[in-house]
Image (cartoon, rainbow, N blue to C red; front, side, top):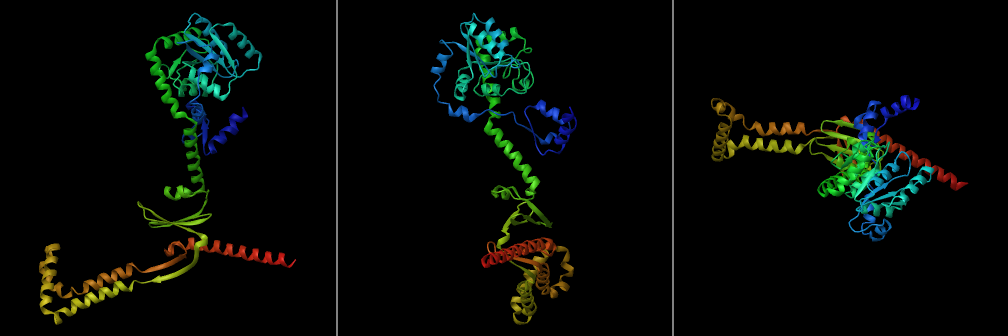
Length: 439
């Protein structure tokens, strides 16, 4: 009680992921303080690989073991032979249907108790029952494929994975509907729920109904197969692996990187630090540096620390823009004197273009036109100032030179610290090697 009252509640609150077998278990965990978003439905799963392995196995020999005659329908119980599973109730159903030559019951499962021995003896007394005992994996698949119906009248059941296995092969289930069974088997959708573990009459009627009504059996069989296909082991493992991966990425900080980048990381990495400014972001993991730029279409540069050869402090000006602007302004200023004819043609075209763009400026154009030669140099000066670069250039052997603005000084210091540590460790290793050599 103390475990459920204190320890378990604390664990549920701090856990990253909580695996639940049924939605009922999820509700109980949420009531105990678990976050619903952390609950992962994982009902064990159907081993689809096992069915695939024995897909081509012949059923003739197993049919002889079941003592089947042409047209006989098999109603199978498969599970441990214990009181909780209530296989004696299945034998009572078989006893009520002993006059139906077209129905045969099969009892299979492990049991080494006194109760199991009583079940075996009673099964052998009934003419329409075959007691199979414990089965191998291959025999289990053969039984499921040979069955027309599955029956389980448990007194208590957390889930009932065996029922999912029968449903996976399109075998409808008759169940007592206790615990997780009420979730797996929906009444008159995937099978039939009777009124509890002691509803022998209801179970017998359900068996006869589905044996006699082939259309209803076909509908339940189709729905059973469709539901169970969502709970194959391979599919559930993939979903669980994805959930765990997402949680690991969140804990390690890798969610700061784009999904395309995360998919390429074969070994787990941990984000140590990250810095961002404007549309650029720098993420430092335990092994490399990622530089991202852009918001919607994000470009990411990956640089292993060992590839950063040097850090250059830069202050760069784009003199070419300023030079081109100055030359254009000079041409506009001097063309009145050297090319008067061209000047008038050029001026008229500029005038027409300006009037189309700004028709309200017509009165002011005579005053503005003599100063038009200042436009190229003004634009060039603006571009010159905007393109001025101060900051750091990382020289690498893979992607060349990568620029970082002064706002990323902390990331530069982090890189320096890492490089200094590597260099220090290398020097220490060399000294230790020399000491060992002199001994």
